[in-house]
Length: 259
Image (cartoon, rainbow, N blue to C red; front, side, top):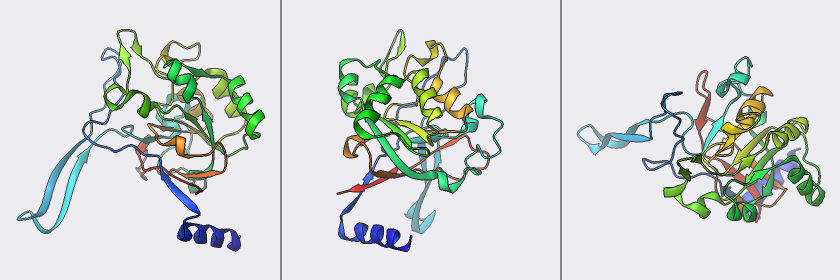
């Protein structure tokens, strides 16, 4: 084991291991999910207020207060985020096993399909087709759906909503069920939430939330730069803030891959 870690350290130092930032910038223009007011209270947008900046309020230091919802920007969904996962003793941000927060990534490229259809849905058969090319998804892996969404629609149209609701790609319930059967660690996407924009209308509404969290699995949303990762072989690092009884957290997601 020592040799493995030494090799990793050497690779980071000599540049043969590349660190890829999968995180969007978090600021006042960061898009957040808007739920119908008749069914939910919405999260506030990100805001930041200066406390001091090398001035009379603090002559040698700069710092701010920030206000935001747990599920803002690039963020982690813990099992207790959804009612189906509410009873897991290790389902909050402060109780998640640390071992689960670093792991291998399987990147399923759906960018061509998404460019043709913003409502594209990844099915179990689609995952199996990927496995036929790249090998079986191993238990404990993170499965990431590459759509190049931010590059495709831009920040100003990130939610891609009209009078019929948001339109963005995501998984079907059969896809999520198949990944749970594979015992993956979690599911990640480049869109604002882990489900498709129209997932409220699915036979199993919001399957990436209800089914994944019901199985004590995790979610990652608003990722970016998945086009810089190979289908297999990368390692991702995804620790949320250790918020007491937190349902999720903004985070900086990093991946390590061969340069």
